[in-house]
Structures are given as C-alpha cells and as structure tokens.
Image: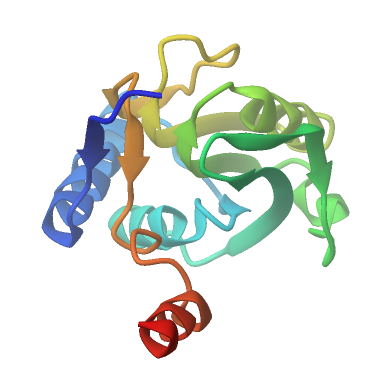
Length: 165
C-alpha cells in the first residue's frame, strides 16, 4: 500500500455530497428511498438524502473490511435486517463511501434490485479496479482514503493510546 493517502475533510465532504445530489437531480432520477451501506455510507447517505429532499431512509449492514487493507473472504450481511419487502415498487438510491473492490456494492445492488423497481448507486469514491461501478461518483482514486468520521478511530482506541503514552 502506498504511503500517500487521499484525505477528505468535513468541508470537502459537504461539497462532495452537494455535488453528488445535484448530479442525481440533473440525471432525472428521483428516489423514493435512500439506503445507506453501514457504516461508511451512513453519513454520505444522510447528507445526500437531505440534498435530495428524501425523508425515507434505511440502512443495509454489510461487513467486508476489518481494518486498513484487511478484508473478509466475502462481504456478509449483519443484523439488523433492512425491511426489503417495503422496497417493492420503489426507486432506491444506494449510498456508500467507496467502491473499493466493488464486492460490497455489487452484493447490495443485487439484493435491492431483486425487490425494488429501480436501484441506482452513488459513492463518494471509486477505485480503478472496482468490479462494480456506481451510477454516480464524486472522485476516483487508487489511494487509501482517510474519511473525516473514521480517521481518528474509535474513542476507545484513542483513549487507550493516550493512557499508555
């Protein structure tokens, strides 16, 4: 992994989600529901839902990354479950922070497409090698991305490091 990183600031995050919201509006797609892939897609999902004026939101809990550069063999769904039956006939916008390998995005799109009338996806970032391409994306990079909400780790990690210093 390269020592260089892409760093997204809170201001950059606000700009990115507004730009993505405008791109979605310009495309003519009008989602009934915004579904975020938890955890990374929760903040972008909320910001984009606000940007689009969509009040119906949900989350799909998927685990794939277990740390920086470490992944499970395949993405897995976690509880609590999204009420997939409620998506029947709906236009769904699926949101995540990054399409890295694209495996999480592909799993989620396939799962939602089996229920919803139309599914489109949006990611802040995509990686060149991703097997799934989001319908809307802010930037492409091959660097590791430091997001403002996860850069410092958990407060438990932060406090443990401070206590041992």
